[in-house]
Image (cartoon, rainbow, N blue to C red; front, side, top):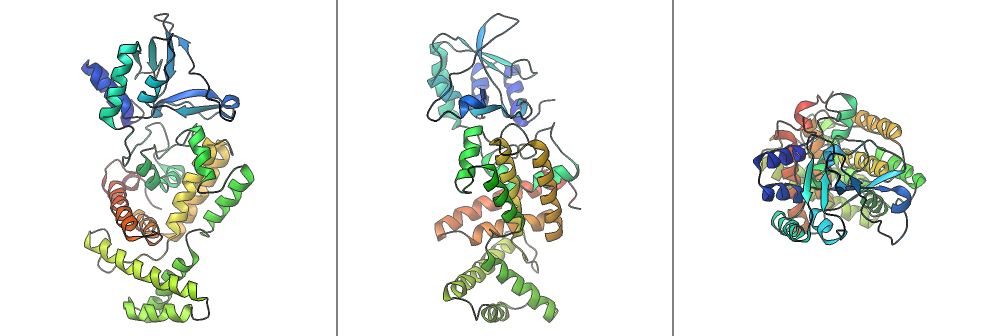
Length: 375
């Protein structure tokens, strides 16, 4: 069985016998080249493409892998992502074949003579590159149990980026990108900084203390009243809670309340939040991002798979304490993202993207949110 839909599409394209369909399938996915970590860490130097000799034909080939067939994590061997167009533009003049997934059931051997390289570039232009906003599941990765549950907390970002959600492996996206993403926005350049940042995410310190206090104030008020408070009652309670704080905090709290009210109303109008439903905590944003930080750190070689697995299991425990269901967790993640948007245009784009991710994860029959019990 093909590990992901990417390999399935490639096998079907090959079976169809049309070269153009094969190239289109390859142009829509990330392709990976194995690189010694020692070479990848040399500043400003791009290692040459590796070559192998195909045992059956004797042909010299450049080997690449699709996401579903990447090998297990190794501390000294890493991968760099190269699209089909990038391969065409940097192709070595003396090699005439590309070996995709060599030795696997989804293996393809492509002609790489100059006139065929032009066809690769045309396929790149047609496809627009690797797809984003799609759910990718590794059939060989965790699909049930606590580890799968923990990994699924990071599925929003995995869907957003078009990456496999259920893997602790050789890469998150690729070695250089994983390290760059940890550096910005997370400010992580070495292992100690990574552990400190992960600890902050596990304690919900980065989601926004003002915004979280606004929601907790509503929870406390609802418990005291025995009913859902009106917006005016909630606003007055927030004013009292922030009365002794700096003016900037009071203004931020008022804006957070306004955005929560606005987006919860939109959630209800779009049918993803019950008429009497509400979001009680934004912890999902830190927990979901924490899973992706763990995966980035594993790809950047700031930790090892066993440690990463323990961290993901811990995140799953924290999420179950904070939320009663996948839907509640997902809405908490969405709302946190929206209340932090900088301007109206960014907020509208984020809303559309977030709602699409929520629907993929709560409605797609293959989604972990549909197949993994919350508790």
